[in-house]
Length: 435
Image (cartoon, rainbow, N blue to C red):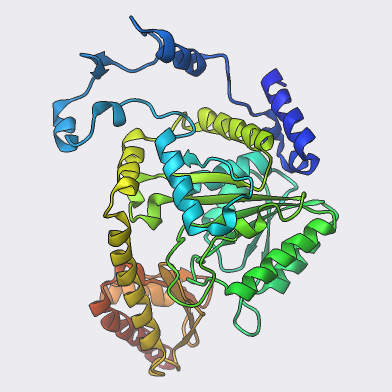
C-alpha cells in the first residue's frame, strides 16, 4: 500500500474507526499523490516567476492559448477562467460560494463539521465517487423500489454491491420509514449498509414531510445503535423544487453528527438546481466529521477524481460561479421555480378531476420534475410504445404498471392535451384487448 494511502487510513481510523470500516478496498488503497506532476506544477505556479515549464497547457502572451472562433463566443470571460485546468477538487471560489449557498438553504448543516464541497462532473459522478470509496462485493446498498435505474449501474454493476429494496410508500401513501428501518436492521450480520435517500424522488416526484423525515433519521440512528455502520447518502439532484408542504432541507443536516457509526454524504449539483444540465457541475460534501477526518476524505476523493477524470471542466465551473455571484440570481431562479410549480399544480388539478380514475391512479407527488401514473388496465410498456408510435408522445415505462411523466419539459398550456392523449392511448389499447 502506498504510504500516503496508509497515512490517510491511519487518520481516518484514529478519528473514527467506524468510518474506516465503511471504506471499500479501493477506498483504502486510494490517495491523492503529493509528489508528482500536479504537486510539482502547483509548486512551480507559486514560485516559477520566470519560466514555468511544468503543466500540459500552452500559453501565448502570458495567457492560455486559445482559438479566436471559440473565444469570440466567450468574450465576457478571461481566458484564465475557462482554458486552464481546474484543480482536481474544483475551482476554489466556486467551492466557497456553493458552501455558502448550501448552508443558507440548509440551516441544519450549520455548525455540523461541514467539509468544503468538492466539485464533481455532475451528480452521477458524485455517486460514483461514493461507490468507489465505500461499496464493493458483499456490501449492501439500500434504495426504495421506486428509484433511478442508474443506482444499479453505479453501485451494482461497477462495484459489485448488492441492492436491497423496500417499498417507497406505506399503506397510508406516505414514505415507508418502517420499510427502510427493517431493511437496514436486516444488515446487522454484515455490520454495514449504504443508504441512498433521493428527495425529490426520481421517478415519483415525492418528498417526505417533516415527521416522515424524523422517522427516516430515527431509523438510521436505530441501525447505528444496533452496531451497523451506515453511509447515509443524500442524492439531492432536484433540491429546492418543493411545491407543497414537505421537507424544505436536505436530510444531510439531520444525519450529520447523528451517531459515530453514521457518515453523512451530500451529493448535489447545479445541473438541475440551476437548470444547466449540460454544464455537468456537481458537488460531494462530507458532513458531521472532524477537520482531520474531512481533510482525509477530501484527499481520498481527490485521488478518485485524479484517477478517473483528473479534474472537472473549468468553463462550466466559471459559468456557475458567475451566476451565483450575480445579484439577479435569486430572482431568476424564483421565476423558474414558479413555472415548475405551476406545471406540477396543473397536473395534480387535472388528475384530481376524476376523469381518468378508471385508467389509472397516481403516486403521491409534491416536488421535483416528475410524477408517476399507476395504470389499471394496460401494461406500461405497451402504452409507452403505442403513445410514441401513434401520437408522437414520449413517456417512460417502469415495471408492469408505472408510467413516468416529466411535467418539467411540458409547457403548462399543453398539459391538458398531454394527459388527454395518454388517456386516449389507454382507451385505444382497451378496445384492442376487448376484441
